[in-house]
Amino acid sequence: MMPLSMVREGESNVIKKVGGKEETKRFLENLGFVAGGKVTVISEIGGNIIVNVKDSRVAIGRDMANKIIV
Image (cartoon, rainbow, N blue to C red; front, side):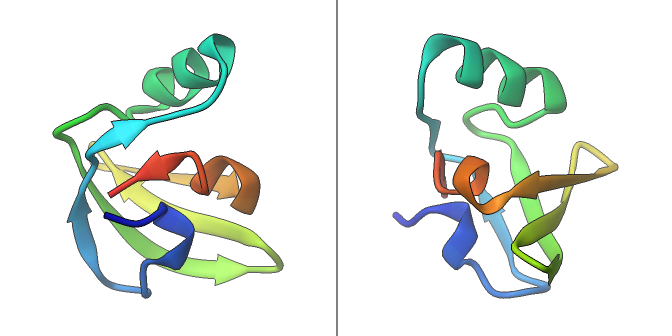
């Protein structure tokens, strides 16, 4: 298991858990980051990570990506 921020581009992973404060977890879950869901890192630009989750592209900061464990 490792944080999403350490995943290489193009690699597909299954989300194991979402950490952080309750409001952070809720925010990420609303974006589609839920345990058991698939996530693929598309690219990383200036500290922001662009991922494909639930057929949507989402950009999140490195600090948020560190809270998503795959």
